[in-house]
Length: 218
Image 1 (cartoon, rainbow, N blue to C red):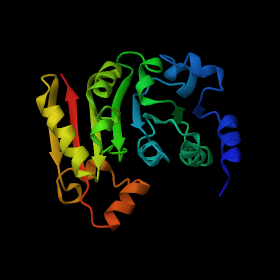
Image 2: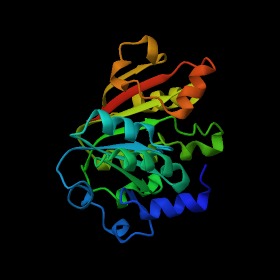
Image 3: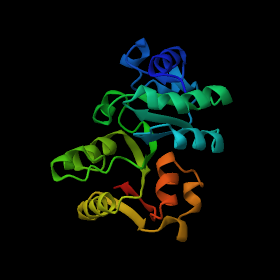
Image 4: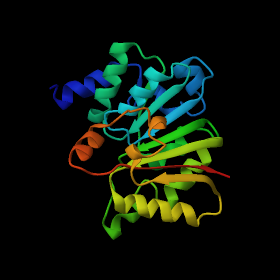
């Protein structure tokens, strides 16, 4: 296993990682198609992507779409970005940034779809505002997604899922909300493409049901 110093050196050299040390970091907003992907294909985000299993998996399955994994931790991004480099996945990129800063990196309506896969559930009451489905995050997502973009959440955590579900059901700007508390015994299994993150594999093996929901903004 490479140590963190070596990992940081790798992602510094890899063109598929956008991070603060690179000039493009400051002006990539609105330029993803021209500067990074060199095409006009729709952009899907994987938020708090960790190792980027969905970014890599979706890039393999949908070569005519662009995929960006976003995480603040460079040593996490290293895994997915390295696989994408090895496989020549030119439609996969990674952004090292905090999710509260997404408006600095994407124009209004620039994003076609969003996946939120196994985020930190932040179970303590004092951490509610840090949950990535909190109101302040939803407003950011609403600003950057295109009309009829789909936002999806997968999690094993019942508390986070119920919190998110209640919040979405209370909003007047949410439409087409569907959900299941047991993804792999539901009709929605196929649309998750059998891609499983490291955390999903761990929690599934421990007997946890996987929860899933998706919605659009009006």
